Image (cartoon, rainbow, N blue to C red):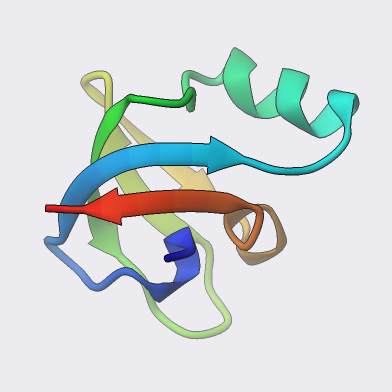
Length: 73
């Protein structure tokens, strides 16, 4: 499932990150890496997806969130 398909308060793990090397480098630099546990805080249509991971609240734009595959618990 993609990060954009998660619901508020849903927990899981980052499964895969797809995209070019620039995207992968940028997204891993902010702490989103494969295997990282996360919790979706807010996921409203047409707004960035708010996720809590590594003790940090991160807003991921919807285009980037479409490239992040997750496994939910």
